[in-house]
Length: 403
Image (cartoon, rainbow, N blue to C red; front, side, top):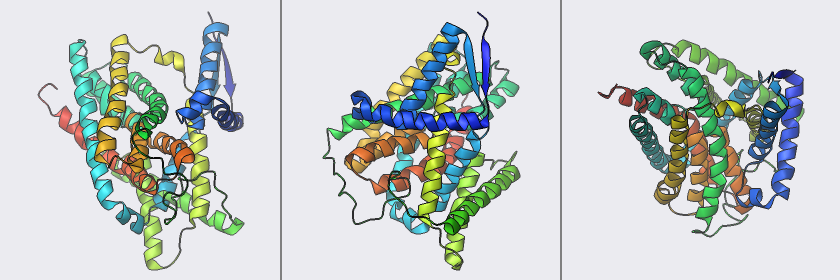
């Protein structure tokens, strides 16, 4: 059956993403299971639209292609706002917990690669494919997957490595947004949900209360927008400078680092204090639109083309992620409400990406009360430290005799 392609431009895509967010809000509010399992609104709305696109492609032979050219800038803007919100005082506040959580994350990276390689050998696949279905695409996401798949293709002659990496990363993005809520629901039975009074003696982080009313002004809004643009420009320059060296990092990590540097240098010099309310608005808008675009533009029929053995590895990885969050992340991080929110966030970036982690945590804290600690620790570990740690872990595995 021939397929008719419908192309939707940038403005149409932006309208569609906005409608997906509104639809997701109504869907979660009116659907008891989605509310019970605290499924993020962009995930709920985006997946329904993706399923509609799958139906149209398979039944009617109609394929819709969205112009997602602004998706990457939105993602980078989100990471810039994470950096701009990270003052040294907040990082010190989460210091010991952040180090402990980083070791938990390292454990997951090792586990994902052991599972991927072991199952690849068991199923008779090339060892590199097991690594590709491990921390490279799951904890690393699309960017890390694209970078390493190019190496696998050019140096080891693995055909279709890039396509396979993108499919694995997409699978992880979907599952990361779906399992965080159910994992939190299981763990909440083990702790007392604190309610809205939790952490009332502390100021909430910018991503913790996305629905809160924030008073802003035109001038301060423009100033905040300028800081984000400076973070983007500086991050791109840093990424280009490091490209091809042993210190090469994904662009979003460089943007985040530049945001941290910009905020704290301006503060130390006494030149400017970042106005968190505007940064919060811009960050949450960027996050919501990015997730909506990422999920509504999923080409689910391409995931169906994953070879059955690779699909089996990914299903096992998703199950292992849920078990790790319940039995390791939750226990190591204190077996309290904050540990529940951290576990939900870990599911988000352990299988998908930091934006998914934030959405998972927002869905939980919106219903059961704030967790300031989780919103300090997860963005920095999930968006910055994990990529450095993952690069080291991947290179260690690549140095094994089996390769």
